[in-house]
Every structure is written in C-alpha cells, then in structure tokens.
Image (cartoon, one colour):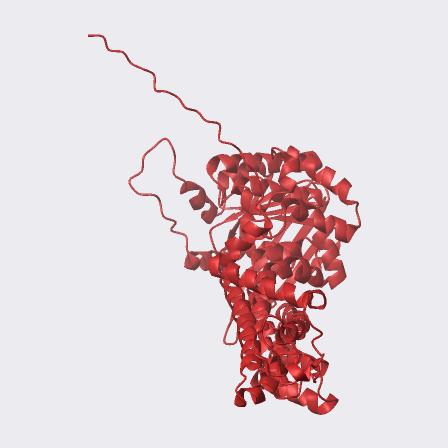
Length: 283
Length: 297
C-alpha cells in the first residue's frame, strides 16, 4: 500500500460534564493512503461524525481527545492556531450533509467560492472566478457564470451540494471529508452528486473519508470500508462488504432488505452493547 | 352525427421572464409598509427643510426684531415671532438641524461602539463575554439623562458634552440586542463551515456574522434615535445642552414656556409639535424595521 496520508492511532474522545464523564470514541484507529477512499459506516450515534470532527479539530472544547491523528507526518492534535488554520484551509476540505445550512445566506455563490482564496491566499479575483466557473461546469452546474451572482436560496439542494464540492475542489485540498453528503438529497440527485464526487476525486488523486449509512454506496465508491460501533471500529478492510467477519457487520449486512423477496417484517439487529462488551472481553 | 373533437385551443403564452430588480423605492415600501413609508416621507421633508435652512429659512434665526416681538402668525412670519421678535419658522428650521444632528451623532457613536463590543463578546464568549455583559448591565442601570448630566458636570454645558454622555448611555441598548443576534448566528453551521475553510475569527465575525446581524443593528439604531431626540431635547430644555442663542427645539420649548404664561403659546407649541413629529416618524420606522428584521430570521 502506498504512503499513508491520514493516520488515526487509538483516538479517544471523552466528554466531561460536571457530573460525569462519557467516553464516546474508544480507540479509533485507521489510516487513509494517498489517493485512497475509505468509507466509514455505522449506525447513528456510533461516532462517525465525531471522528471527522476530531480530524478537523472542530470538537467542542468539553471533549478531551487523546491518541494521535497524523496528517502527512504532522500531528493534528498538537497544532497551534496558525498551523491549524493552514491545515484546515489547504490540506482538508469538508462536504456537509446539509449544504444549505453551511453557506452564509447573505453572500452570493461567487463570494462563497472565491472570498477565502482571494483574501487569505492572495490570488487574483478574476483568476479564482475563472477557475470557479470551470469547476462549476465540471461538477455539472449549468450556466456557471450566472450562478456566481446568485444567492444560495436561488439554488436547489442538489445544485448547492455541487457548489459545495466545487468550493472544496477549488481550495485544492489533499483529503476530502464527506459527512453524509447525499443524505439530504433526493435519490437522483444523490447518484449524480456521488458520481461527480467520485469522478473528481479519482481524477485529482485525492483521498476521501466518506461517511454514510449507505453500505452499498460506500462499497461502490470506496476501496476500503471501516465499520463503527459504539465509538470503535469493529472491522475494516477491503473485504468487509463481500465477506464480513465481525458478527455486527455480518448482521448489519444481513439486515438489508432485498428487492427480490418481500418480507413481512424487516430484520432487527440482535447485536447490542452487552454482546459487544462480551465479545471484547473474550477477544 | 359526427363528433368533432376540437383540439383544445392552446394559448401557450410565453411567460415574460422579467428579471427586473425591485427598485430602492419598492424595496423600501416592502420593508416599511404604508404607515412606515408615510413616516419616512414626513421625516424626509423635515430633514430636507433642516438641511436647506440656510437657503430656505425666510429670516436669520438669531436676528431679533423687538418691535415685532410675540407676534402671532402673519404673512411675514407664518408661525409668528418669539419674545425677542425672532422668526419662529426660521428658528424651527435651524433648530431641527441641531435636534437631528445631535441624536444622529449619539446613535452613530453608540451603534459603532455597541456593535463592536457585542461582536467581541459573542465571538470570544467565556470571560470576555461575562465582563462585557457586566459592564453593559451596569450602564443599563443608569438612566441616559444622568450620563448627560455627569458629562455636563465635568466638561460644562454644550451640545457635544451631552452627545458624549448620551452616546455612552445608548451603548448597552445596541450591544444587548446585537450580542443576542450574534450569539445565535455564531452557532449556525455556516460559521463552522467558514472556520473549516480556514478563515480567521476576526474575518468570520466581520464577513460572515456582521452582514447577518446588520438589519438588526440598523433597526435598533433607528428605534433608539427617537429616544435620543427626546433625551437631547430634555437636556436642552433643562438648559444644560445647547446654549442660547443657538436655535434648538428643546431650547425653544423652554424659552417659549415663559411666553405661554403671557398668552403666546406659538413658540413652545410649534417646537413641541415638531419634536413629537420627528420622534413619531423615527419610532414608526424603527418599529417597522425591527419587525422586518425579526421576520427575516
């Protein structure tokens, strides 16, 4: 395998409140190679989003994070403010579940795309705008010139998510974090957006950390999968989708409804925290 | 019987795609409503009359004509003359300049300072927020007039000292409202998205949060303007603000007060009515702007 870009080693996050401490990430370890896509799957509350927030250092200060997150040799958890800004703006790019909430409603799409690069990287506005137009075209936004002067509320959700992807690509990061980028979109927009993200990522040789509930989608566009349960990665690798080994993954994959047979009741996972603890104790 | 099926007459009208941007007037009307627009029009007339006083005023506002003192409305003096025979209409026009410029300055200063404090408090949070909020609460406890009086006691009576005192008194009103709005904005996802783009805290505050709280800032500023007009006029009425012979509406109410007892209420009433009119206009506009700003959230 080629060189690792992002490596998480035994990352733990403990939430301290006044009366109790709760451990929400219990030793997460994985790595993403340069140009590789890793799909992080798991049920709600398993710690997927928490993991991306740890990687972006966007966790609330109430969390105590330990372990090591290394990005291309640099330790993310010990970065100073200037380094952190640099890392956030140049090394990583994030695509969110709800694009509408993540753009400022008072700025035009053009401002949203170009402002950061013009102000903080000192690039010429015309040049950035030209690149933005090219990129919008590549991600399938029609009439890209006109979009630049429009406001977010004038665009549909799918369109706005493409704008988000363009904004991330514009900053030329090395790792894209996509936190359920298609969950808020309808099915056709989903497949379009995913296809574009996948195509652009491969064309540019970027790494991707893809977070989703959708196992098939993750399997289709990621080289490897990592399955999370209760703040831990229970199983990871290229084999997960075809031949799962961990009981939770087996059950999870078995619970998918099939289009061929009609079920009276959908299967319910039997796996729970007790079984989980027991398995860990046995191992 | 032949059944003739007529194809439905198609009247496909091309919808005229009009991408006309609403003009300033239309936008203003949408925001202010009928009453608000009327208030804005009245205020505009007053402001224009005040601004063009040097050109339009029929007489020198300070020129006394003792022979014509305490005259009622005549063709030469449409609103009559005061105890020193000065033309009341001219004095109203000149006085409105002071009465509008003074509070305008108060609001300008307090809005800039108050907004800055509020944004710092909202962004930094924690101890900075606590300290700023404390200071604001203390300022809140003291009535505006008292600040004006303190300022007068230190630097002597004049328009500028009163303006300085009132500006301090109005800071917490702006700051409290803006801080609340900024706190709400600060926790919205677009702020974390900007953070993740690598923007700085200062940059996010000014380019992301400020434009979103700006309608609230303006609405609050206009609403406070009405109170500032009254406060400043009151201080002038007490003889601690604008000094005679400069024309000022508050001062005119005071000097006209003596004439009322002598049976000539013209000066006090006309100045009083003009103050009320200005305050009413400003308050109505402020209220409309406030409810529009709220409904945009």
